[in-house]
Image (cartoon, rainbow, N blue to C red; front, side, top):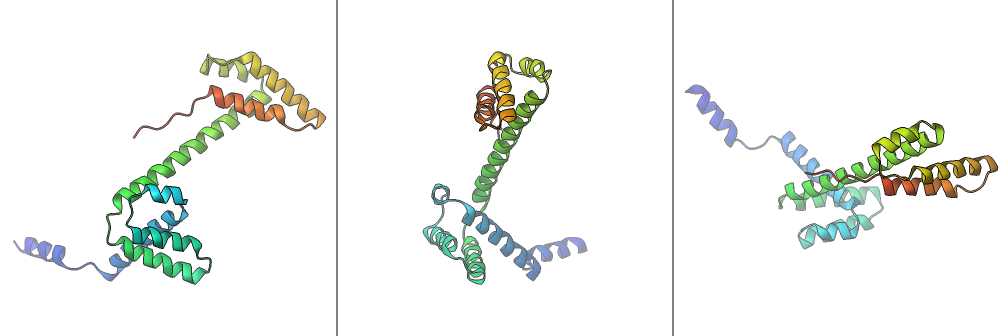
Amino acid sequence: MQNNLKHDSEEESPLSKTRRKRAMHALQDIGEQLVALDPQQIAELDLPEILRDALFEAKRITKHEARRRQLQYIGKLMREIDVAPIQEKINARQNASLHHTAWLHLLERWRERLLADEAAFTEFGQQYPDADLQRLRVLVRNTTKEKLTGKPPKNFRALFQELRAIIPEKVPSN
């Protein structure tokens, strides 16, 4: 019985100053992420007009202290709205960006492997049976010639574009 009374009074007590500050800083961090978005991306979010104007103003400010104060103001404005959907959209955008970067790194690794090792063609052909291996071999041969003669990397880029067409970018499902 005594524990129940103590537990109920803890829930009704106001947040500590430390918790309030952490919450305010978290809102300011979300505000910074919003400021980093381009105007089109900000327009896609369903934000109140006053918050949208504050974000555009923060983009314009270059002085450190003025920008810090503007971000505090944005955090204050964000206390009035539900930030969960905004945070979800920001996280989804970041995850998509990370996924795209990983795909580009995969293409780079395949290009380097194909340029370095003839046996990589067999493995590539097994993983991507629809690939035109003859075209890839020609691009690899031409890329090697370009490097030896010091010519611009036209075929090096063409090899990347060919790999980009062969290897699909899989969109992660949520």
